[in-house]
Image (cartoon, rainbow, N blue to C red; front, side, top):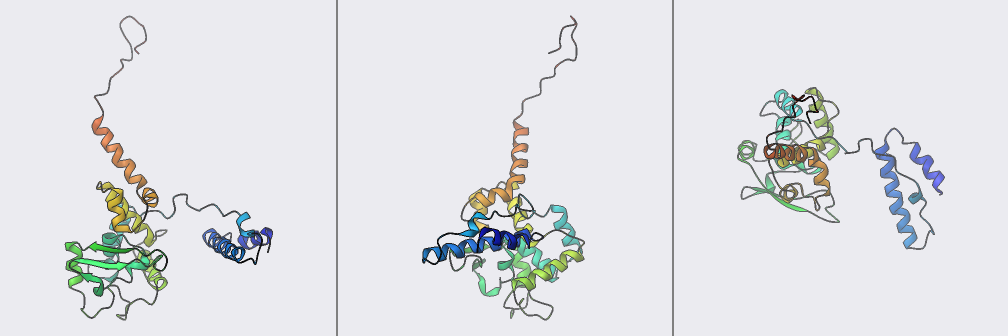
Amino acid sequence: LKPQHLIAMRDQKVSTPGAANSMLKALRRLFAFAISYGHLDGNPARDVPYFPPVRADGIPAWPQEAVDQFAAYHPAGTMARLALLLFCDFGQRISDIHRLGPGMVRDGEVHFTQWKNRNRKPVTLRLPISDEMNLVLSNLPADRKTFLVTDYGRPFASVNAFGNKFRDWCQQAGLEGLSSHGLRKYFSAKMAENEATDRQIMAFTGHRTSKEIDRYTKSAEQARLARGAQNKRSRPFTVPPSCANGKSGT
Protein backbone atom coordinates (compact mmCIF):
# COMPACT_ATOMS: atom_id res chain seq x y z
CA LEU A 1 0.00 0.00 0.00
CA LYS A 2 1.13 3.51 -0.84
CA PRO A 3 -0.22 6.88 0.33
CA GLN A 4 -2.15 7.40 -2.91
CA HIS A 5 -4.02 4.14 -2.29
CA LEU A 6 -5.00 5.27 1.20
CA ILE A 7 -6.03 8.69 -0.10
CA ALA A 8 -8.45 6.93 -2.44
CA MET A 9 -9.82 4.89 0.46
CA ARG A 10 -10.19 8.04 2.55
CA ASP A 11 -11.97 9.94 -0.22
CA GLN A 12 -14.54 7.17 -0.56
CA LYS A 13 -15.70 8.19 2.91
CA VAL A 14 -15.88 11.93 2.19
CA SER A 15 -19.55 12.01 3.25
CA THR A 16 -18.57 10.70 6.69
CA PRO A 17 -15.29 12.49 7.52
CA GLY A 18 -15.26 11.20 11.08
CA ALA A 19 -15.30 7.60 9.87
CA ALA A 20 -12.59 8.38 7.31
CA ASN A 21 -10.34 9.87 9.98
CA SER A 22 -10.97 6.93 12.32
CA MET A 23 -9.91 4.56 9.54
CA LEU A 24 -6.68 6.51 8.97
CA LYS A 25 -5.97 6.60 12.69
CA ALA A 26 -6.37 2.82 12.95
CA LEU A 27 -4.17 2.26 9.89
CA ARG A 28 -1.42 4.47 11.27
CA ARG A 29 -1.33 2.33 14.40
CA LEU A 30 -1.44 -0.88 12.38
CA PHE A 31 1.51 0.14 10.20
CA ALA A 32 3.45 1.39 13.25
CA PHE A 33 3.00 -2.06 14.78
CA ALA A 34 4.19 -3.69 11.53
CA ILE A 35 7.29 -1.47 11.47
CA SER A 36 8.17 -2.41 15.06
CA TYR A 37 8.19 -6.09 14.06
CA GLY A 38 10.18 -5.55 10.89
CA HIS A 39 7.37 -6.23 8.42
CA LEU A 40 7.43 -2.72 6.90
CA ASP A 41 9.99 0.03 6.38
CA GLY A 42 7.58 2.97 6.38
CA ASN A 43 4.14 4.07 7.44
CA PRO A 44 2.11 5.07 4.34
CA ALA A 45 -0.85 6.25 6.41
CA ARG A 46 1.27 8.85 8.19
CA ASP A 47 1.56 10.87 4.96
CA VAL A 48 -2.22 10.98 4.40
CA PRO A 49 -3.84 14.02 6.06
CA TYR A 50 -7.06 13.75 8.00
CA PHE A 51 -10.22 15.44 6.80
CA PRO A 52 -10.83 18.68 8.72
CA PRO A 53 -13.42 18.31 11.49
CA VAL A 54 -16.99 19.13 10.58
CA ARG A 55 -17.25 21.18 13.77
CA ALA A 56 -14.13 22.88 15.07
CA ASP A 57 -15.35 22.52 18.66
CA GLY A 58 -16.76 19.03 18.21
CA ILE A 59 -20.28 18.00 19.14
CA PRO A 60 -22.30 20.99 20.37
CA ALA A 61 -23.56 21.20 23.93
CA TRP A 62 -27.30 21.20 24.48
CA PRO A 63 -28.70 24.67 25.15
CA GLN A 64 -30.93 25.02 28.20
CA GLU A 65 -33.94 25.49 25.93
CA ALA A 66 -33.41 22.04 24.39
CA VAL A 67 -33.14 20.39 27.81
CA ASP A 68 -36.38 22.09 28.88
CA GLN A 69 -38.08 21.08 25.63
CA PHE A 70 -37.08 17.42 26.08
CA ALA A 71 -38.28 17.44 29.70
CA ALA A 72 -41.57 19.08 28.74
CA TYR A 73 -42.35 16.40 26.16
CA HIS A 74 -41.23 13.41 28.27
CA PRO A 75 -42.91 13.67 31.70
CA ALA A 76 -41.58 12.33 34.98
CA GLY A 77 -41.93 8.56 35.23
CA THR A 78 -40.98 7.86 31.61
CA MET A 79 -37.80 6.10 30.60
CA ALA A 80 -36.83 9.08 28.46
CA ARG A 81 -37.06 11.44 31.43
CA LEU A 82 -34.98 9.07 33.55
CA ALA A 83 -32.31 9.01 30.83
CA LEU A 84 -32.23 12.81 30.77
CA LEU A 85 -31.89 12.92 34.55
CA LEU A 86 -29.02 10.42 34.52
CA PHE A 87 -27.16 12.39 31.86
CA CYS A 88 -27.67 15.72 33.60
CA ASP A 89 -26.89 14.46 37.12
CA PHE A 90 -23.80 12.36 36.38
CA GLY A 91 -22.35 13.89 33.19
CA GLN A 92 -21.23 10.53 31.81
CA ARG A 93 -20.86 9.15 28.29
CA ILE A 94 -23.69 7.18 26.78
CA SER A 95 -21.57 4.01 27.07
CA ASP A 96 -21.73 4.38 30.88
CA ILE A 97 -25.22 5.82 31.34
CA HIS A 98 -27.01 2.80 29.88
CA ARG A 99 -24.96 0.41 32.08
CA LEU A 100 -25.62 2.11 35.43
CA GLY A 101 -27.70 -0.01 37.77
CA PRO A 102 -28.72 -0.69 41.39
CA GLY A 103 -25.74 -3.00 41.89
CA MET A 104 -23.43 0.01 41.59
CA VAL A 105 -25.08 2.00 44.40
CA ARG A 106 -23.37 2.03 47.78
CA ASP A 107 -23.62 4.51 50.66
CA GLY A 108 -25.40 7.17 48.66
CA GLU A 109 -22.96 6.99 45.75
CA VAL A 110 -22.76 5.20 42.42
CA HIS A 111 -19.50 3.27 41.95
CA PHE A 112 -18.33 2.21 38.48
CA THR A 113 -15.41 2.07 36.08
CA GLN A 114 -15.90 4.06 32.90
CA TRP A 115 -16.34 1.89 29.83
CA LYS A 116 -14.00 3.92 27.64
CA ASN A 117 -10.35 2.89 28.05
CA ARG A 118 -11.40 0.36 30.71
CA ASN A 119 -8.71 -2.12 29.56
CA ARG A 120 -5.94 0.42 28.94
CA LYS A 121 -6.30 3.33 31.35
CA PRO A 122 -9.30 2.54 33.55
CA VAL A 123 -11.01 5.40 35.39
CA THR A 124 -13.03 4.40 38.45
CA LEU A 125 -15.52 6.92 39.82
CA ARG A 126 -17.62 7.37 42.93
CA LEU A 127 -20.33 9.93 42.24
CA PRO A 128 -22.78 11.31 44.82
CA ILE A 129 -26.47 10.74 44.16
CA SER A 130 -28.61 13.87 44.47
CA ASP A 131 -31.78 13.88 46.56
CA GLU A 132 -33.90 14.18 43.41
CA MET A 133 -32.10 11.28 41.76
CA ASN A 134 -32.30 9.17 44.90
CA LEU A 135 -36.07 9.68 45.06
CA VAL A 136 -36.47 8.60 41.43
CA LEU A 137 -34.22 5.55 41.75
CA SER A 138 -35.90 4.42 44.98
CA ASN A 139 -39.19 4.06 43.07
CA LEU A 140 -37.74 1.77 40.40
CA PRO A 141 -38.38 -2.00 40.56
CA ALA A 142 -35.82 -3.65 42.83
CA ASP A 143 -35.09 -6.50 40.41
CA ARG A 144 -33.72 -4.29 37.63
CA LYS A 145 -30.13 -4.91 36.55
CA THR A 146 -29.88 -1.46 34.99
CA PHE A 147 -31.79 1.74 35.64
CA LEU A 148 -32.64 2.14 31.95
CA VAL A 149 -34.50 -0.71 30.28
CA THR A 150 -36.22 -1.43 27.00
CA ASP A 151 -39.98 -1.52 26.47
CA TYR A 152 -39.75 -5.20 27.45
CA GLY A 153 -38.10 -4.45 30.80
CA ARG A 154 -34.66 -5.73 29.81
CA PRO A 155 -31.32 -3.89 29.74
CA PHE A 156 -30.39 -2.43 26.37
CA ALA A 157 -28.37 -4.94 24.37
CA SER A 158 -25.68 -2.42 23.38
CA VAL A 159 -24.73 1.23 23.44
CA ASN A 160 -25.94 1.48 19.84
CA ALA A 161 -29.34 0.09 20.80
CA PHE A 162 -29.72 2.66 23.55
CA GLY A 163 -28.35 5.39 21.27
CA ASN A 164 -31.02 4.65 18.69
CA LYS A 165 -33.71 4.80 21.36
CA PHE A 166 -32.41 8.07 22.73
CA ARG A 167 -32.37 9.51 19.21
CA ASP A 168 -36.04 8.51 18.86
CA TRP A 169 -36.86 10.30 22.11
CA CYS A 170 -35.12 13.44 20.84
CA GLN A 171 -37.03 13.35 17.57
CA GLN A 172 -40.33 12.85 19.40
CA ALA A 173 -39.56 16.00 21.37
CA GLY A 174 -38.86 17.89 18.14
CA LEU A 175 -35.08 18.05 18.67
CA GLU A 176 -32.77 17.49 15.71
CA GLY A 177 -29.00 17.70 15.40
CA LEU A 178 -28.35 17.02 19.08
CA SER A 179 -26.66 13.97 20.57
CA SER A 180 -26.30 12.42 23.99
CA HIS A 181 -22.67 13.55 24.13
CA GLY A 182 -23.95 17.12 23.95
CA LEU A 183 -25.57 16.51 27.34
CA ARG A 184 -22.14 15.64 28.76
CA LYS A 185 -20.96 19.03 27.54
CA TYR A 186 -24.11 20.66 28.92
CA PHE A 187 -23.35 19.11 32.32
CA SER A 188 -19.79 20.47 32.31
CA ALA A 189 -20.90 23.91 31.14
CA LYS A 190 -23.53 24.14 33.89
CA MET A 191 -20.95 23.25 36.52
CA ALA A 192 -18.63 25.92 35.12
CA GLU A 193 -21.45 28.48 35.24
CA ASN A 194 -21.90 27.57 38.90
CA GLU A 195 -18.19 28.34 39.38
CA ALA A 196 -16.97 24.76 39.79
CA THR A 197 -13.23 24.43 39.23
CA ASP A 198 -11.73 22.34 36.45
CA ARG A 199 -10.66 19.75 39.03
CA GLN A 200 -14.18 19.52 40.43
CA ILE A 201 -15.64 19.02 36.95
CA MET A 202 -12.99 16.40 36.14
CA ALA A 203 -13.90 14.56 39.36
CA PHE A 204 -17.33 13.96 37.82
CA THR A 205 -16.51 13.51 34.14
CA GLY A 206 -13.42 11.35 34.66
CA HIS A 207 -11.16 13.37 32.37
CA ARG A 208 -7.47 13.03 33.22
CA THR A 209 -6.48 16.50 32.00
CA SER A 210 -8.25 19.84 31.77
CA LYS A 211 -7.69 20.16 27.99
CA GLU A 212 -11.04 18.61 27.08
CA ILE A 213 -12.79 20.38 29.95
CA ASP A 214 -11.56 23.69 28.52
CA ARG A 215 -13.33 22.87 25.25
CA TYR A 216 -16.51 21.83 27.05
CA THR A 217 -16.73 24.93 29.22
CA LYS A 218 -15.21 27.65 27.02
CA SER A 219 -18.45 29.55 26.38
CA ALA A 220 -19.62 29.20 29.98
CA GLU A 221 -16.27 30.41 31.29
CA GLN A 222 -16.30 33.40 28.94
CA ALA A 223 -19.78 34.42 30.09
CA ARG A 224 -18.88 33.98 33.77
CA LEU A 225 -15.69 36.06 33.42
CA ALA A 226 -17.59 38.77 31.56
CA ARG A 227 -20.16 38.98 34.36
CA GLY A 228 -17.34 39.24 36.89
CA ALA A 229 -15.65 41.95 34.86
CA GLN A 230 -18.91 43.89 34.65
CA ASN A 231 -19.06 44.02 38.44
CA LYS A 232 -15.50 45.37 38.58
CA ARG A 233 -16.01 48.14 36.04
CA SER A 234 -15.73 51.69 37.35
CA ARG A 235 -18.33 54.29 36.49
CA PRO A 236 -17.91 55.06 32.78
CA PHE A 237 -16.40 58.42 31.90
CA THR A 238 -18.69 60.41 29.60
CA VAL A 239 -17.01 62.48 26.90
CA PRO A 240 -19.07 65.57 25.99
CA PRO A 241 -19.97 65.82 22.31
CA SER A 242 -18.92 69.48 22.24
CA CYS A 243 -17.54 72.19 24.48
CA ALA A 244 -18.05 75.92 24.93
CA ASN A 245 -14.80 77.03 23.30
CA GLY A 246 -15.49 75.00 20.15
CA LYS A 247 -12.52 72.70 20.60
CA SER A 248 -12.67 68.96 20.56
CA GLY A 249 -14.75 67.40 23.28
CA THR A 250 -12.08 64.80 23.85
